[in-house]
Image 1: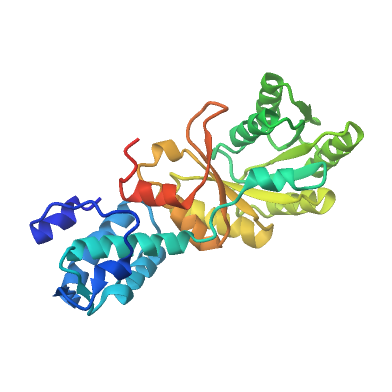
Image 2: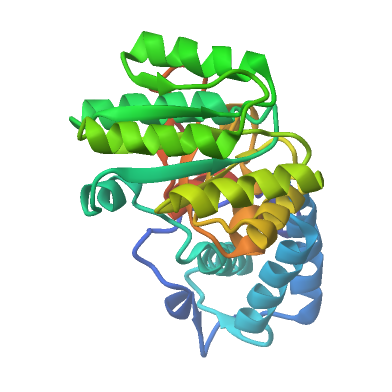
Length: 313
């Protein structure tokens, strides 16, 4: 990430031991960090973060945090200004991501049965596929899963989740296209109770988030089945659109956690940073491909590594 920044100092980047803290690099001796130093580098950092699809308000917050940490301070003779700024920047990103992780597995394990999870998100984000991936994950942990085909707006959506259910050996509760999505979710919950199933995953319609009828449908489903967890599924490639979608669903329906899809096609993954900051909700998973196993638990350090190219794998 710092190739362009290194040119400002005519130096190559030195690896800093992970155990070293900013306070140990910034001390009472050595070169003083000037406002010019910071302004030049922070301009470069802004461009890099924006290119990584980090939203501008978050970029500004990160820059302000770095500037506050370092302005007028001195860099220990063993290090360079670049080192101090990189470390301060990583700390600022970690601060934004603080509390952004969500332990879905522990939530399921510690909850009464059946656990009801409702999924929100517009069409094309990979919501139904994400549900199938979580079905596979839950089954691998020994749980029985019921799928609710509550996207009754499109016959194709019912067919899609039915195909996933058949492949995974999971019961799919469905009605005819155009039916009441809340009634489907209710039937799925009753089936799970009667058959002593562990988890109910509720798919929902994904028309544009500004559609009032869609929001009313989602609210009705939530009233009827009272999900224990409501998950927003967002497209990491959608940039500001994903942020606005998340904000709208949070305001209208309420969100407990987030799954980001298509992260494998997002070079830096800045959407994770932006959404985590914008709606102040944790990220549970990242979808990394099309296969049922292509989903990973989100960890803040993963995001830091991704942004700073520290992850060589």
